[in-house]
Length: 108
Image: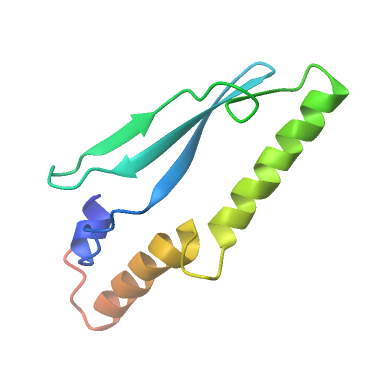
């Protein structure tokens, strides 16, 4: 949130980020989003239930479900249509920060 606010990008309301807690063979899926109107607030939903919410690696089918989950997360993160994490948020933040540093305005 601090990075987003620093580059004037804190008002992004549609950005949802997947979060994971891996415990042993189990991967629990959560979703985080920036809360509008609250300073530095991030809301976390989950853990999700059902096939999306829990991937396990105890079986061959579970391993393939987990691989499919990670493939989809990486696709989302690299989405070039400005909807994914890189294009829609982190790429913009880093470009703005690099531009400020090159101007001598880092403020960090």
